[in-house]
Image (cartoon, rainbow, N blue to C red; front, side):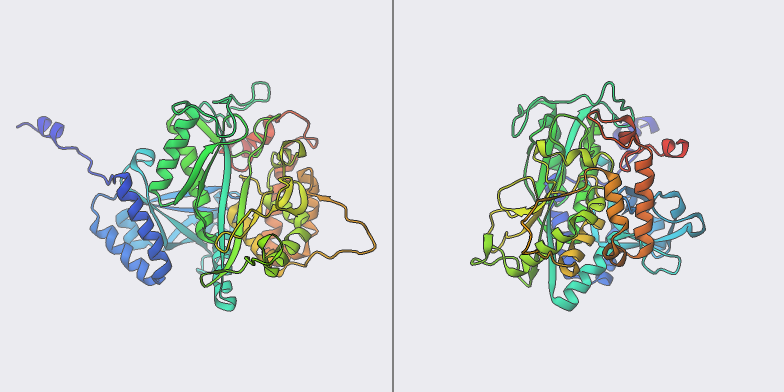
Length: 483
């Protein structure tokens, strides 16, 4: 037999490809192991696996910058096994990270975050892990809010015995064409895939095919899916997955957006998480459902409390509402986000709590001892989830409660109507400076100011080209440098 004949029979590449049912089992087992094993035990377990599994070619290590962009580096598996305690990268090349003089940053590995990926979506032979950004001396980098959130979660558990549980509902739009954000112009706008609405889509139309494909990939990645469906606006989608502790919930949000973008690209389309890509229809939100548990008990539940919530839950509501305006820049971090906060489209722009009014910033869903929670509805889908939850949890625990002046009648307060007002309130917040640290607080404001300055001050009724092209989540790095 000739070499040519043998090549036709035997594939040259033998990279790892795992059926979806096996993938789901692997990923759910890994999530369970992360809760039970120590970091050292997890490192030993997965290093042994990587050495044993010959069909794996690379390890993808990912991290999130201060604005919420998701970054990924692929390390050759053999190199990773020998050098995972000394991985470095150039932080000065990451917008929102270090200055040129601080260019050498390190990546620590969170071994418990390993996820096996569907090969038909992402290609074969890789696993993904989340990294912790470190300074040269291996101390935590203060602008890595995944690490800051992990630290906060550990401190909560150690000092109060509390776990913050989060379930996210992240909406997005599916639009025609590859890289349609980079090609955006306000004359043509985005071309919608579907003209249907809430729950309405033919089983095999492009939107439903996209939703089904993304949901299957999520399920295989251990998301523990709950439901998925078209949303209120045409071409809008939402895929729901189960709650998790705060850090894993944020990891799943980042992976969710990655899955949706990749599945859409594979289908020749674009999944966009701009809060309001199309004028005249509902925008997209990232509702964060938050509760605290102690052991197996949900401490936000009280059958005799107002709306089934405990006094502790209402205390958290009071603190978040009191700091709502200064938090707005973190929860709604882009020029485009303030289009979404429009009361004509069920927008949660009122600084109040309600069990029924979807215009309220915080809603109290019907719940029981397992599901009692706060639904924080004002968060945009382009927010950095780690930073958003770090500040929300810190505010719920340590913020100043809302006080009522008995001599004045209640008036509804509103969230800022544009990024300039949000910036002013954020900059003036001593609470956020103390919570975030002065350097990250200033750095975040600097990047948000740059974004605001690249856009017209008045929003108007048309989605402007600049608010799409200079949006922090859109990959137009060349434009930023040319501005």
